[in-house]
Amino acid sequence: MSASFEYWDDCVDAEDIEALWADPEVSTEWLDAGEVKGEKIHLSRDPDGQPYLTQIEMRAVAKIVICRHFESQIDPDMICAIAELESDRQLLATRYSKKTKETTLGLLQILPKTADWLFRELQYQKYEVEGNPGLLFKPFVNVYMSAAYLKWLSNNEQQERSEEFVVRAFKGGTKKAINKSTLPYWKRYLSVKESLPSSKCLGDGPSADHASSSAPTTNSTVARIILPKHFSTRAVRPVSGHLSVCFTLRFSGFATWLFGAAVRLQGKEEFYVPIAEIISKRFVDYPTADWLYKELGYKAYKVESAEDLKRPFVSMYFGAAYMAWLSEYEGRERSPKFVVQAYLLGPKNVGLNEAGPAWLKFEEELSNYEDIGREQGSCVII
Image 1 (cartoon, rainbow, N blue to C red):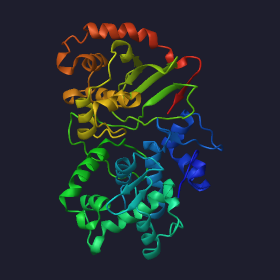
Image 2: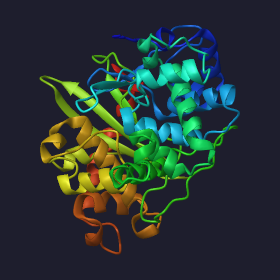
Image 3: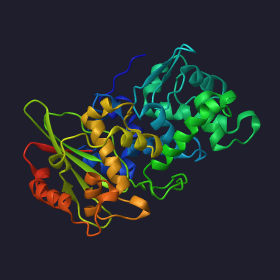
C-alpha cells in the first residue's frame, strides 16, 4: 500500500494535468515556479520532504472533481478545509487508530473500507478503489471518494443535513455528529475555512464571512520562499493573509540562515523587511504562536511547545502570520511603519508618529536587502 510520488504525473491522469493547467491560478503558480507545460510537474514538498498540495492546487482539484462528478452540490471550501485539518494537504498522510485498528489515508483521511462501500454499494466507480487502497493516496481519487461520502452524509437517513452535521459526521461518524466529542473539530473547521484564500474563479462555492474584524483577511496570495540552489524542492507551505509575505533565505557555512520578510500591502510597492538582522530570538514567542494556531487558524505547522519554534520554518511561518494580523490591528489597515514597529515592540508601544528607533533601525537594515532576490545562485520558489 506504500506510495511515492515525485511529480504530479505520478499520481494523476493526463486529462487531470490538462484540467489543472486550465485553471488560471494553478497555471500562474506553476509558471512562476519554473514549470513548463508539456513537461513533468514537480510536486511541492514540505521541509520534511513530504509531497503536499499548495492551497491553490488543493482548491483546483476540489473544484474539478466537484464540477465533473457532483454538479456543484458540494462546497469546494468544505473539501479544502477538511484537507487542511486532516492531512495538512499531504498526499501520503496516514493515521492509525489504536481504538479501531484502522488506518485512514490521503488528503481527507478516508478509510479504505468506506471507499470500498461507496464503490460497491453506492456505485461511485470512477476509480477501481475496491481492494486497492493505495489509490486513495492519489489526489483526484481521494477527493472523489471523500466528496461522495460527504454527499451521502448531507442526506443521511433521507434528511437534508446541515454543514455542521456533515463535517462532524465526517470526523466521528453519524452517531457522533451531535456528540460533544466532535464539537472542537467543528470549531477548528470553521476557523480553517475562514482562513482559506478566496478565489474568483468560476465554480467557487460561497465564501465564509469573516467573524472578526481583528483577524487577518485573506486573499489568494501565498508566501514565496527564495532558496539557494542547494535546495531541490520547489515549495514550503504557503502563508495566506492580507499581506503577501515573502521570506528570503540565504545558506552559508553550516546551515546559517539569514532572512528578511517582504510585505506588500494592497496598492503599495513590495519591500524587504530584514527582521532577522534586528532580532536574534525566535520570531514569535510560544503564547503568540499558540494563539495564532488555535484562534486564527494558522494550521500549516503544529506548535505544541516553545521547542517547536526552534525549527526555522515553523518560526518563520508564525512570524508571518503575526505580521498579517498586525497589518489590520484593531480592524484598521496599518502602514508598513506600524507593522514593523509593532512586530518588534508590541502594537501598544508604537508611537503616534510611527517613526521611532525601531523603524530607523529597520530602514538601515533594509538597504542591505534591496537586491537580494537577484543574487547569483538564488531561485524563486512557490
